[in-house]
Length: 469
Image (cartoon, rainbow, N blue to C red):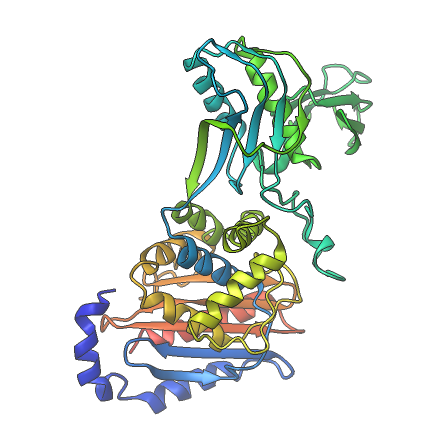
């Protein structure tokens, strides 16, 4: 997409770019005739260099974006914070002098929205401590997630939230996506207790196994009971003898405490003594940083947009709010940050409602015009566009567009973001034509009849029609 080289040529010859505009519009109208009556939809196709509207239909009508909401979350994040921004988890101590190998005080593991942090990263931080010669901690290991508010679930900040898609706790400190994985297998004898292992293993977790090996087909259920110093998982039901190993996952409802226990367990395993019990708390203002694990924002947006990861998007949403407000990250500040970015860049947000970072909520409201304006602004911003473009799925190649538009010129030439919600199918992105020009496309259907495949097919047909230009 060589925008600079094309700009002057496009301006001079803009009258010849689409000599068959009326024919193109007729073809798109023919495709849209298949849309059932009563379906709400918006279509906007735009050339960002010539500023020509190629096609527009209901472009200012309010509509649900589904995961096209992530275009606002990641776009504003990259514009405000930059692709090099480090989304991190850090290790601190309140002991200013650790040269004796003893931490006379506490260790603090503080999260700053790094939703990709894992127990392997904890092992890396333990290695840092060992390389510093640390062999004893006289205080506690404390998990700190105060960079965000403690409202962990979307239903608690979105009034009467209708989305049925569950997410793990959305917290500033995250380990393994705030989940524990269970692997279950039958024992060799009928009536024997089934075999259970967890990942990651953690001394905070207690497991009570009531499930037994059976002759006939059975099911397993896992319930969770939480107290201030332990999680008990109770496993009931049964597994048929000789059945395959199965896996379950369960959310951890106290992420900072879970992280603190995990770190202490790994410290002890590495031969570092910790004198007091782990806890959740807040890092003091005066501390010494001992280590950090981070992901750059450009890499984080890739794993948000390409697979359309809702959990990571919600964590980034609050990170944007914290960065913007210089305060605790929450949904209010996140919405303010994105709205401010839209206003500052003269993107019409009349009627828009951005209540989460992922697009799961049915209370999100946008227009395809606002999406196109957002994509146009980013397209013309060389500091943002490369990272943004690289975060999007490529038709026929990867992400949620891997299986679409294969065998057409749009394959490998359309970079976009899909969106799927009950009754909503969305697609927006950048299309490179054979003429080496670029178009911005946004097509959203809000429907109450027909299958999602029907509407995806209509989107693909419109894009495939455009590439014939």
